[in-house]
Image 1 (tube, each protein chain N blue to C red):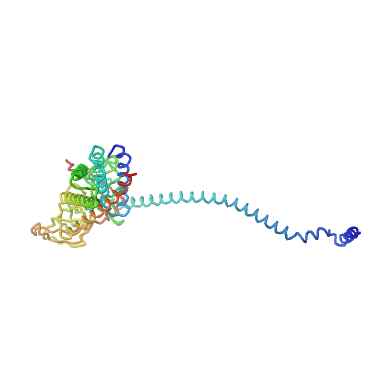
Image 2 (cartoon, rainbow over the protein chains, first blue to last red):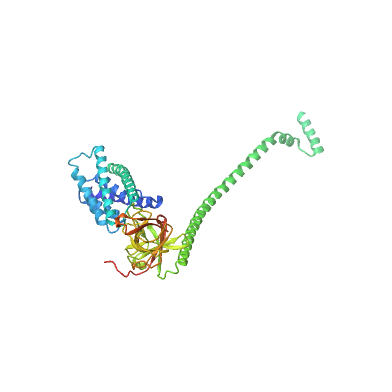
Length: 164
Length: 268
């Protein structure tokens, strides 16, 4: 990622995505999936590990963390780790192949889902019953499914913008 | 000869009927043509005059449409304001027993995160809001109920955790029996009321209010209704746990009220 790409492509797309997230959740009154995480994954699939990309991922992490209580640094760190690990694993797997990329995205979604559960249970002090666990699982599955769909969509959009 | 005869005859004709035979013949012959031309001309004139009038009318119509649009938007704005004032009036009327000052705030962002319950409001430290202050909302136009607590405050906006957030906790009391417990969120529509005494006779339908012992929430503020009661194995059967459904629909929150109650135990 170059500085020019950062300011002309990625930052405007991230702001549009943030607006879209706020709009969808307020208008439809349901959680639309983690669009900002999806944008982060779509971004790391297209860019290299350098200063503009690190700053952009930190910015996305900050936007993602706004929804939480004092967890902004955690999300910034997680997004940068995702960027680094993608670059690292690229040495061993060919992410140019769609199939590999799809598996990698699924893996990242699962890691993200585990982190979400970890945060949830670390804050939770209430005792849960079977019904509660079932609901948590359903919500988890929904979260991962919708986020995965957003990754597919945003990757297409970003790739198109990148190529043109 | 013929011409002379014709002139003489036409003179007689004119003398008898006072009409010119030339005019009569020509008139008879050309009258359909005159009529057609006249009608056509008149129609054409009408058409153009109507067209010009239509052009004016169209302009007027567009102007009126714009005016209507502006007036409709103004009407909607005033209706919205009226609704807001009615809500405020209703809230202040039914919350007159709560002696703390209140700041009305609008929800500006609802992330609807599946594992938390955070909303953003449009009032902050400039209005005197501090962390830990209770947040209330109108419940069905008849009462006010607790919906959450302020956690982070910025000059023009604040973050509020709802009752359903996993990090929310409040000392609560069952109104009918007086039994106390800790109300906790778990990122679902219902909350848990834990540590109720084992001998407690709470039952579904009982109203839960704040006890006031936690020094965060004033006593007697409505929270919700019990929907089920169970005895959790986790606590070796020493305590009962109840599920509490908040009185306010937290998904449809739009207007809330922050109680300006300075916390006695400040945040570290």
